[in-house]
Image 1 (cartoon, rainbow, N blue to C red):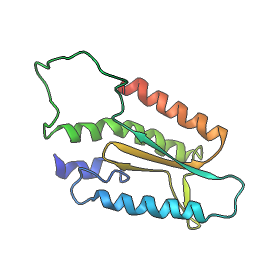
Image 2 (cartoon, one colour; image 1 turned 120 degrees about the vertical axis):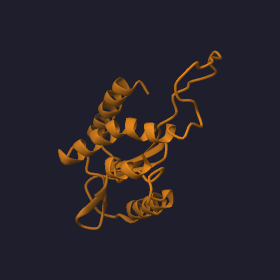
Image 3 (tube, helix red, strand yellow; image 1 turned 60 degrees about the horizontal axis):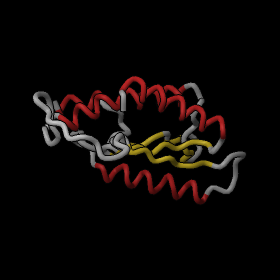
Length: 148
């Protein structure tokens, strides 16, 4: 399964995929943040938003005992997580294609919209109220579809 996922999972995901290293996205994130810090022109500022994709528990819950299915630590769990989160990445790519999100500009012709680090995601775009509403709608749609 790990050999096939590299062709199906967004290139912005750097964990759990054969031939990809999580350190690659760490370097890209560093360069994006350095570029944003050095940026002196432009109508709007930019910002980065970090999402914890597994942050779904709001406190201590009752103990439960699973009787079947996958359990934490199962070798398939990371791959299933990647497949499920593809919905979010598809929504983010669509927002960029429709120019709703511009991403963080790197150079003149390239912009980084999102990066993934296993169960963490960093979004980059203009620091505007419109962008905040777009991200809120994307996350709400993903939440409703995934129950995450």
